[in-house]
Length: 317
Image 1 (cartoon, rainbow, N blue to C red):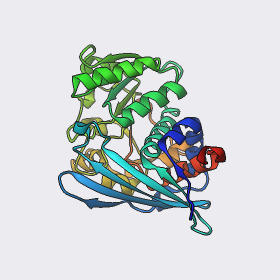
Image 2: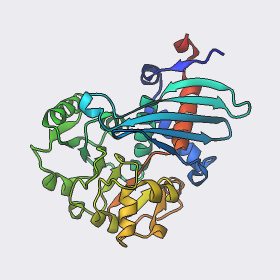
Image 3: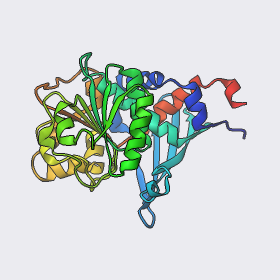
């Protein structure tokens, strides 16, 4: 069997992020119900290493991704998460392509962020605070600048000063007016932010949630287990909280699990992102809004199918 291999470079060269956003929006409005997705499987290895298996199904496609998550990799200048995706035809379950999982994961995560931010930021929004400087932070800086050009001011915060400065320099090349946290401390930047993104994997809250002003959107994407949390419960208590799926969020998000355990957030108040995209829920704009994402298999499947459909056959020769 001769199965095409779609590499990270193929995706970067031939797939527009706007196409991924549109595909996710269509899927949520028509064929995808995240609550019916298969759960992820986790396999714990040694020394902070894990394997993730993520399978999903849709009318046209089925597929699965296997990823490694290695907490020691950032210190080695290697991405924390890496893997491959196998895309199959839904009718025959015949494999159609193997897709590099790194760029697929970065693309679908940033595309979901953009789909949500398009519902909350407006033409007057301009200021972003970004925690982190890894692959997801880099992808979000690129995608937000492309799809939301009114966002121009970027403050970057991170533990490693050199990496933070390098990220800010790269962001400036994309057209951001970028500064690092040392130049504008978070306690100054957070109250001015229209959008805050956390992409760190931190096990501790990154900032004081009381500083976030009403109407600000906070996208928390750096953790995907119910022990680690990038946001404090004070912010969760006073915010609209959007999740990909309620059961998944309760089981896999530390931000959600901790807030519920402390009694400051109710499961019943969680807002599925599908309802937001479909316009079936009213959002209280007098509060901050938190979109907590852990990443789900259906997102990979939708974007993998879009990549395969749009990839020129000549590119795979």
